[in-house]
Amino acid sequence: MKASALRRLLPGYPGTDLDLFLAATRTRNFPAGTWLCREGQPASSCFLIATGAVEVVKYLDGEEHVLATLSPGALLGQTALVDGAFRSASLRAVCATTSLEIRRRTFQRLAQQGSPLALRFQEQIAIAGIRQLRAATDRLALVLAHAIRPSGKRSAAVDRLALACIQAGTGEWDMPLGPDACPSTKRLS
Amino acid sequence: MISAIRAVKVFEPLCDADCAELVRFMRIRQYQAGATIFKRGEPGDSMLVVAEGALSVVMPGPRRKNIEVARVGVGEVVGDTSCIDPTPRCATILAATRTTAYELGRKELTNMRKRAPGLAIALMGALVRSVALRLRRVDERIDRELAGHLAARLPELRDTARSEAGSTGASAWTALLARLRGSA
Image 1 (tube, each protein chain N blue to C red):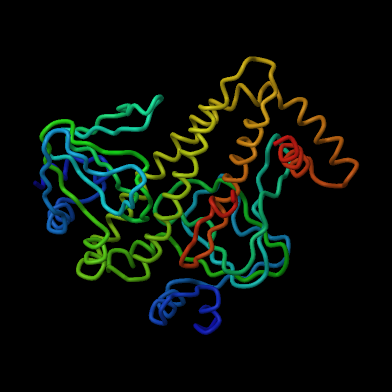
Image 2 (cartoon, rainbow over the protein chains, first blue to last red):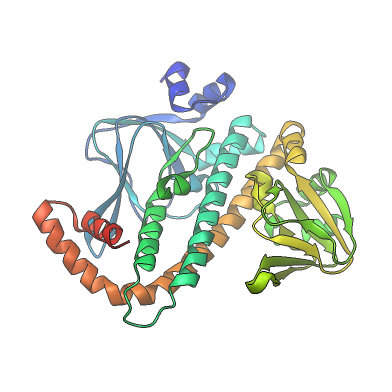
């Protein structure tokens, strides 16, 4: 992939960062129906979708659910770069898909070198997390204000909150790398 | 000053050298007891670390009375997230007693990005960990609060969603979301 093509995916990134990004990532091609990663696996990298489309898939009670379908420019699994947890959902290529993968080890090396790219990434991950926390805190405040109702009384307000919580859960997977990346509020608005 | 920074939970992942460097970007602030430090609704773009004394977090209560909802003591932080992502202050902060605090604002953070990018990355990383932990706690609390309500409603919602999924060809999950949306 060329820096000119990457510029469309990462608007606002200076050319030096785009070159660094290309040098730090590896291009991976996934045929339709194949998995980028599976739920429960250790998470050690994140993906930027370059072409194609990716489904976020989760199994609940043995049933498959597609939480979101993401297009080029979306960054997936970014918390793996700072927190070595497990994948909370699976990612599947809907059609022939190309992604750029950055591994945690590579990211940490860039961070240790004080690379501007690592700083930009770290800041966007922080902002996305902060906005999710604010949205979650607002939801909690609403839940506490409305959830305690007389038993048996149907509460549309709490249904709305349940929906917001589910949407926020899927929103965490959709973080475009634009200057105003804000997954949860975007989806909740 | 470094020992006060070292004691801050949010800064735990930072090494001693990072803490020493962080101090150089912070300003010392002193407040008399009762002084208003941040006002609810005003733009917020700085964080405070309490070195001595205590802060009072105040929210509007019934009949225009202010209620103290929390105390922030030595080694604790307020406004750490607005430093990275500015937002209106969600509560008023008063000095509960005579207080000394270290302030880090957006301007200092911009300066840090240029002069000490390694420290800025480490600080962001520490904040990401702290935010992730808090997010998990809030989400768990929401789950607990909603569990009772949804446990009562879920069988009904699921049955309706399944029958709707059958008739429209949608997945039960999509139908459940549509159902919740419809009742909202």
